[in-house]
Image 1: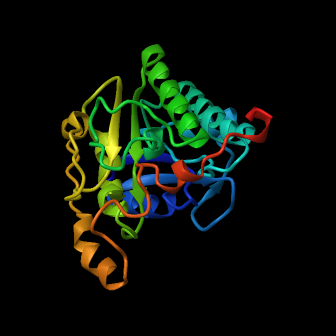
Image 2: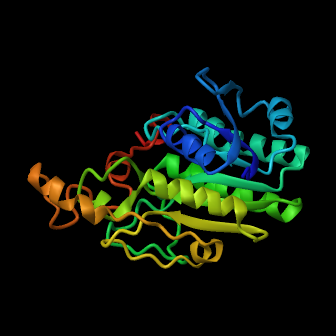
Length: 265
């Protein structure tokens, strides 16, 4: 049975290439968009409000994945991709009357915290770098729009989305692709209003998660990173502690540098 029409941006990306087929299997009629052409993908720029409004008309929801993940990217490019792009898509949602907006946020909003930190509602923002800053700003835009128009907004703070965990840190932060599909599906269908922020993480033994918003929408992850621990150990990966990375943001936190123009000489 069809769940309705759905517009997804960034459909050709790493997350979108897993999410779109999964949502279609659940019965969503997905209008998949990206800046690049591809099989089953409509070429469209998320900054083009008129074009995206046209594509979104009649949709039950928008899943906004498009953006720049590059933590070494120039600030202007990051802000344009992740902040301006989100604002444009929120305007498209408002103009086309779409009632629900699911936004792909990131663990890098809190990436500066110690890797042993618990995922709770009161874990304060501490971005890994400028990428995390843009995701905090885009979350704020979603929240503002839920106050000003008939829109329900859900920001999913996606942790380590990968086919399988690759190191000790990811044994805590892993988000299985199938769990993300289930999470987005519940975010689109749940009987809620206003703004919610949800941790995008699987049921990992090494993660302490207290997420009332996830429980509210009925998200119940099925996968556990610990099932991959033995494989990693056999491959010579040290899984006994926190591993190479000591923050939730991992490499992004450790390698973050201020843009050249902002450094003191």
